[in-house]
Structures are given as structure tokens and as C-alpha cells.
Image (cartoon, rainbow, N blue to C red):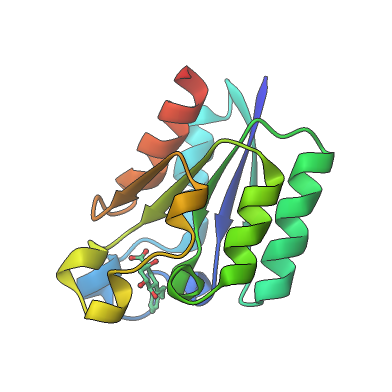
Length: 142
Ligand code: CA2
């Protein structure tokens, strides 16, 4: 079974609890349950969320050591700010898909730049939570 990590960054633990017009009504627990329902039989999913940059970086390093096969990451606002997160992803040498629930190009200009995207195989933005499903499907097929 392939091992895929689903990483969520700052404030994504608030999914479904605020700003439903942007992020929808499903909670992070709902998302993780839906991913396990679709992929649980064919992949080992490890879901991890943190509001702390260093915790995400430590997790990414641990995934390489644990021989994971791929990463799906929504780095939240760290996407636009964190050279350290980008370096961690580059150093992991694992196929990675960046996901954004909203279409970052339809929002404020500061969200149009992703520092982490160059460390990823692909970016999915604006598909809502479906983006996570599409990213895992892609990683399992390749
Ligand atoms: O669209 C996305 O998935 C984002 O990565 C979400 C980040 C934002 O900073 C990025 O620019 C785009 C923000 C996550 C905040 O999540 C919340 C969820 C529910 C309620 C409030 C915030």
C-alpha cells in the first residue's frame, strides 16, 4: 500500500467553523473522513495539521525517513511566506501536490505567490475540498 501524507497548515483546523463562503461548511475531520472513505482501502493515509511552521517542517522530514510515497499539502498562509517550508519540501524528495481550497488567483495579490509551489509536482487551487481527493488520486496513479 502506498503511504500518502495529507498536511494542513495554519488555521485549517478552523475549517467549517468560520468563513464558510470561502472554505465551505465541512470541517477538517469531515475532510479526513471523506479521504479515508475514498482511499482507506488502497492507501495508508497520514493526516496532520499544525498551526506551527516548525512542526510542519519536522513532519515533512519524518515522512522521508518513514519512506512515504507522496505528500498532499495545503500550507495555508505559510504557502506565501515560508522559505523554510519550501526548503523542507525540496529536501524531502517526495512527490508533492499543493492544494488550496480557494482559488488563490481570485483573491488578494499577496496570495498569488506561492513560495512552496516550485517544490511541488503540481498545484490544485479552487476546487474546494475536491482538490485533496484529486491530488491523492494523482499521486496513487503515477
Ligand atoms: O485556499 C486555501 O486553501 C488557502 O491555503 C487557505 C489559507 C490561505 O491563507 C491561503 O491563502 C489559501 C487560509 C486557511 C484558513 O483557513 C480557515 C478555514 C476556516 C475558517 C477560517 C480560516
